[in-house]
Length: 249
Image 1 (tube, helix red, strand yellow):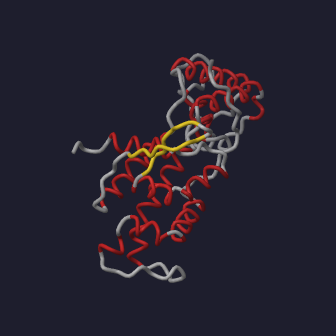
Image 2 (cartoon, helix red, strand yellow; image 1 turned 180 degrees about the vertical axis):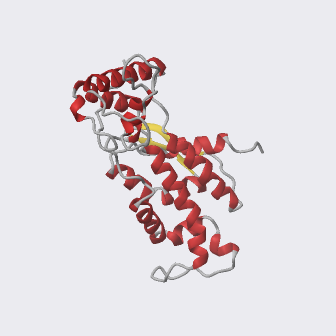
Image 3 (cartoon, helix red, strand yellow; image 1 turned 60 degrees about the vertical axis):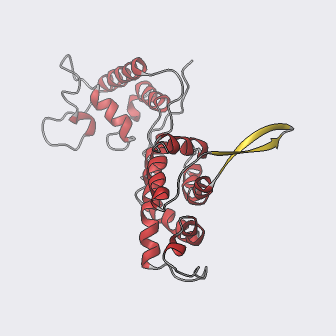
């Protein structure tokens, strides 16, 4: 049975705005532990700095690609799931007066534009009607055309949907980018499992230097995702993707 989503009719703030500054600031607060995990101070023969000292230019440059990976992952996590997109389009179809160009999430506007018609012309011939602020032949969309576009978009998405839950694209981004950063420190990424008891049953937990590194650097991202009600990234998935992409040794 398809997953039901909650409609989203307001665009969320891009992670490249104010959140990116906050993510970097939070990384700086943990810079000593993060950079120590990468061997930054040891490889350069530098003493471990005082926690209250200012961030140096070299530390700043080392943290930049880590912050970039987190922000790219945060932005990818904002991608609207099919279930939410369908629910949003269904809301527009049921209440066409709720349609307001340039205020809906980009995914909703794009789906509407791609399936919009004034009459019997090809789909998207008059896509500018949906965006509303483009040059050229523009008309205010009629409510009936708004409903038809939303319904056509829903049918198209449903026809292309695959069974099962779509993987979180943020996990793969983090595996690729943070994996390269970690390997750049001269360390290998390997999967280690430690036996442990949980709820009276024997199980195992993921351990290792890369896992510890992820635990440090992902804190700002997980906080951002939680505050914005976005799906969290999964350490086990990130480690698995990173090791699958590693060369055989």
